[in-house]
Every structure is written in C-alpha cells, then in structure tokens.
Amino acid sequence: MRWSDGFIAADWGTTNRRAYLIDASGKCVDEFEDGKGVLNVPEGDFPQAVAEIRERLGDKPLLLAGMIGSNRGWIEASYVACPAGLDEVAGALVWAGQREAIVPGVSYLDEERADVMRGEEVQLLGAVGTDLIPRDCLVCHPGTHNKWAVVSDGRIESFRTVMTGELYNLLREYSILSELLQGDASPDEAFRRGARHGLGHGEIQAELFSVRARVLLGQAPREEACGYASGLLIGSDVRIGLGGNEPGEIVVMGRPELTELYAEAIREAGLRAIELDGEQCFLAGVARIAERI
Amino acid sequence: MRWSDGFIAADWGTTNRRAYLIDASGKCVDEFEDGKGVLNVPEGDFPQAVAEIRERLGDKPLLLAGMIGSNRGWIEASYVACPAGLDEVAGALVWAGQREAIVPGVSYLDEERADVMRGEEVQLLGAVGTDLIPRDCLVCHPGTHNKWAVVSDGRIESFRTVMTGELYNLLREYSILSELLQGDASPDEAFRRGARHGLGHGEIQAELFSVRARVLLGQAPREEACGYASGLLIGSDVRIGLGGNEPGEIVVMGRPELTELYAEAIREAGLRAIELDGEQCFLAGVARIAERI
Image (tube, rainbow over all chains, first blue to last red; front, side, top):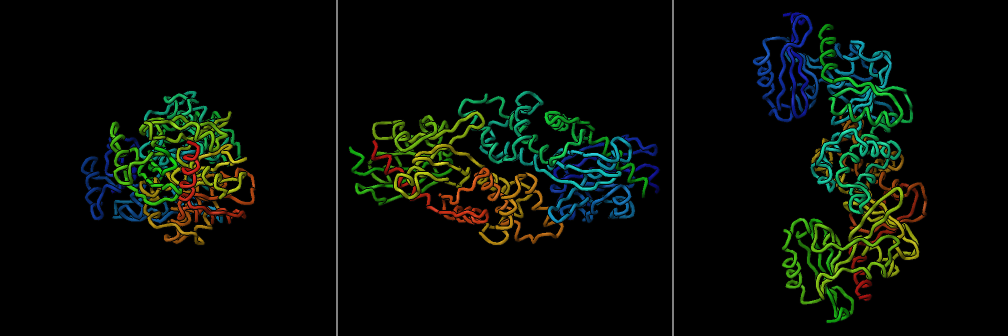
C-alpha cells in the first residue's frame, strides 16, 4: 500500500482526537472527532483505539501526531531537537507498525531554557511547506499551552511555551475568580483594557487578584471581569512572546476563537497579526510529511 | 458583660475557622479549630455556627475576623481604606449583636491598583501594637493570597496581593504539573535554585512549563521539580513584593512552614528575613482591638 493512494491523519491530543481521511488527490474527504484523548485510553487499549479509526475512515495507512507519541500515548516518539524542519521531523517518524507512523515532537534546549511541543510542529511546518507563512517569521500558536515559535529558513529555530490556556481554565474552574470568569471573552473594550495592562505588566499572579478587588471596590463592573482577565492573561502572554522585540507582524495559528483574541492583543501592542486556521495548517503538514515517506 | 473579663476571638476563614478563649489577664486558655469556614456554612446557619463556638468555649463576647465579614459570611463589614491602623479598624467594627463584633477588612486603592484583605490586618496591626515589629517596615504575609504590606507609622499604608498559594494549589491539584508537584517543598538547593530564577524572571506562566520540559529532556531530576517550582513561585512573589526596592529586612508573618520558605527566598535576594508566627500576632491583634471596645 502506497501513501500516495491516500491515508488517514490524526491529531491525537490529551483529551480528544481528530482524524481525517486524505484521498489520493490530497483532499480531506471524511473526518471525525471524539473524546478518546490519550488520557482516556487505558494502557494496552491503543491498538483497539487505532483500529476504530480505520473502522470509521477506511483501511488506509495512518499518520498520528500529538500526545499519542508521548510517554502517556501508544509508543513514545523521541523529540527532534531544534532547528527542526519538515525533513528532520519526517526523517524521525516512529513506526508502530508497517502502516502506522507516529510524528515525533520537537524540543528546544539552551543554557537557560528547556521546552517541548507535540502536535504544533505539524501545523507550523505545514504552513511553511505550503507557503502559507514566510520562511522567516514569528508564530504564535495559542491553545492550552501557547507556543511562540521562531521560524528561520523554514525550520523551527526555537520556541517558548506559555501556559495561558491552562492557567485560564484552572482559574475559571477552581479559583476564587471562578464566579467572575464564567462568561466568554470577546475582543471588546474590557478585553483590550486588560490586554494593554498585561502588555505593560509582568506580575500576572498579582494582577489577577486585582480583577476581584476591582469588582469588590466598585472600580470595575462585574460583567467586564471575564474579558478583562482574559485580556490580562493574553496581553501578558504576548509580552513574553515578543521578548522585547518588535517583529512588525506575527502569524497567529490555531482555533479561530482563540486566534481572534490573540490577534486583538497583538494589535494593541501596535503590531500586525496574520490569523491562520490551525486545522488547515495541520492538513497541509501531514500532506508534506506523507510526501516524504 | 465587659470585654476585660475575657472574650472569644475567632479567625474565621473561607475553608476553616479557629477560635480562642482569652481570659481576663489576656491569656489564651482554650481554643479549637474546625472545618466550618464560611463556604461550608449554609446561608442562614451563621447564628447556629456562632452559638456552637460559645458552647465549646463559654458564654463570652465574640470578636470575629476574616471572611466571616465578607459578602459570603454572616454580616458584611465594609473595608476600612488605607492608611489603616488599630484605631481605624477598631472604630469600624460591625456589630452583629450586642456581644458580637465583626472586624472589617482593609482596602487599598490608587489610580493603578485595587486590593483587599480580610483577617491579615488583625495579625499585622497586632504585631505593630505589641512592638513585635517596627512601626515602619515591609511585611510579607504568605498564605493562599500573600499580602505585601507597607507599614508606616504603625498603620497599613498600602499593600499588594500575590496569589502564589492559590496558584500553587491549583497547579498541584489539577494541572499538567500535578504529578511533579506531589512532594512537599523544603528550603533546599532545588528550592533555592528555583527562587533565584524567580527573583530574576517575571514570566511565571512560561517558567512553570519549563519545570516539566526540564524533566522530560533530562535536564533536571524529577524529585527536584516540586522544590524548584515552589522556589520559582515564591521567588517571583518576592520580586513582586520588593517592587525594585531593597528594604534591608522584611518581616515574614504567617504559618511557620510557609514563613520558612519565604524567608529562604528573601535571603536568596540578599535581604534579612524576620519570621513571626501568625497565630501569636492574631492573638496580639484581637487583644489590642478588644482594649478599644
């Protein structure tokens, strides 16, 4: 069986997975999403969970990306070190079977920092390999763990993770701010005010408490707390991602409801944001990797 | 009934409460602690919850401090604005009955910031009023929400809350770092390394992810992650509390297992830490307030 006759690609994360059937012409012709993230599959049950994908989408070769290659997944696929391009990542696929390839994650290490990603590299390199983004640029990839990636000559040169999405979810679910954060943030004036503050102030663990104090002391309306807090976190995230630089434009890649908020905060920083849909980038990425098999 | 014949004081928080019987000589002669924090008492049940305290410690006047005076407590006691000393706080007691006084919290407001405290003011002003600390000093009061208070001429001049304790608990209970944070932090070399990093770097939502990446990439032993992360958070907290100043010495007031860690981080910043037991300061505070009734 040749991969050019079509294949199935899956973005298999911690809490859910999304699988796509790619036909011989490279088009996505069928797909599904379910809650079988790696944490919801008992050890030993991965062959069955993989078989289910073929039952639903057809008996094709499988290209699996994301946490499925982690130590909590099916088979651990070691990280490829930066700088990492399509050739490096495709060259380090781990084969779980003759027709089941797992995409490795990417790691970054210098004297100061250590960092890892799993799954985002497919989207990032897919966008580069399909000329959706320049071969030299700064990419912001929001999600549970936002990745700021420096792309240089078409490869991931370095990157840094900011835990904004996870932090926001923890605060919303379990913290003293929980009640105040029950709405949905949108790129409105409260969000922009929070973003401006976050862009200028690094002390997020103090600024967050002030969200509550401002409401208690009548300094801010309760209904703006959610937007302001979201702006604060995302503005602070953008400040970290820029690291004192002003790149002019930033590519923001991911789910549209998130890229919209990050793009707004980036504009508050006086920079241009180019939004890209993460799913399209993922499909571009798996196509570029499959070509190299 | 006169307060000088003895009274009961309670530090009534969100998740638990601690009550003390103070005799006519000012000594604490009996006490108990239970899980009836304000969130665990249904609305309308506060009179009963108060009556239980008297059943256990005697039929004495009651001085109640902490979240019992919040909008989730028995009766809301409005905040006293900074600068707030013993006279201002004692003068703003809210009387739930003829023999039941509630201590108000303290608020801080300027053009930039809004902040609130409830309960810590009793300890802070108790320490001042009993000459346990100078009338001009910087106090660090670790807990779920650490308070950095500037004490000036014996009054709380301003303060700032850092959500370190709550953040640490959220990360330990629910986050991707959960597994790594199951130990207990102690002031060891891993803690000091984290503290030094936190003292120098403000980007806590990025630095925290690196705790995991460092272990995954073999850059740090798994068993040091908990101490390092605790040091990172507390070092970052101290950096915020200092706000670029170098006061020489800092009073650290609270539970000994916490003041020990903060004192270590303060020493890593090259400053002197004076540790005080929060319970002793609370008892001093209620005595000074009761004198003013």
